[in-house]
Length: 449
Image 1: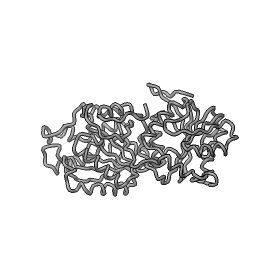
Image 2: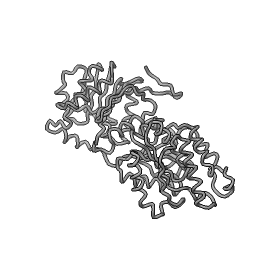
Image 3: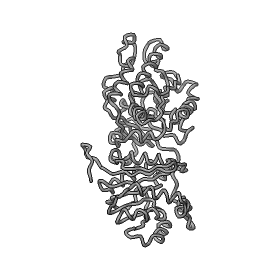
Image 4: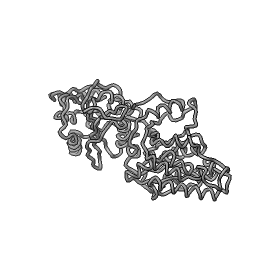
């Protein structure tokens, strides 16, 4: 299942939405840069974020761990001795996840009272500098509703770091939310849940490293906390939930595009720019020898890419939200056989399918996460099994909440495993991707040609 669900106002509603969330590639959510995980206590990184850590390491991304506390209040035991034990356990768990070389930032805040400590005020700046040091563009922290004061503090810390780094990808992972009743209030209306696969065996090995929390350290027997067996089993399924926090800001309103196109405006120099012409050629080129019956292009502008698509599709429905630019496309390309230019707005107001090819060039980053979810849901219903999806996104600054890479990664992730990569073209300025829509049945088999 993909696409937006009604805003969850209780934890039960969000839990059900999470259970039906698309199973996607963790590397897409992490993006091209590094990853830092905030762990409130040693063991939280193993329980809730192992899938992200393993995926980042396997993808060759830089990985870092920010340890909020050393977990020295879990047992009635000398605190420094317990802290040292738990630091060793955490380092061993990171090695079990294949992240033994990852730097660990130890904030050293008090277990159980991290947000009340004077040092918490400067923690956001420290973590932001840590992100910069390892080249991380993504930060993961416990879900804001995770029922523990240090987990709340970790989520608040992550939000404070994003306030310092507004372009930061922010992901939330649940740990203790299994405790929450369905009627418990939910505070994450701007979160989009995904499911990711993790290496269950590596995760179990990592959790096993935290012996102090498993009741297997003799000196600690009967003196404090032990992870319940049912809790460990619930977190050992091989699938984890990760929620994408919406990027701050609002996408442009329709009037923005009216102003850009007013008076025969060509804001992106698509008529004259050698860069734009080369990008169109490269984008179309990754389709190879694809020939199809019916194509849909969203955000067609004056129709120059539409014209280039004519050799690949017998019929093309080209859409733009601005009436003036649609009329201009009709004038410029009125003799283009099989092409029809239509005024319509993403994400819902689109022509009916079915389509064998859908093209979205330089448009996804003008939407927010909720609109991307609606668009994915709309297109899923409009594409034939086996249809081609062609994306092109600018990799520079876009002046929108989502960058081109962010928007593409969220959009593709919303399809779960129903999109297969075919080919791609990338420069320093743009990324073009050709994907194939293969909707999978309940047993995971791909349908379509």
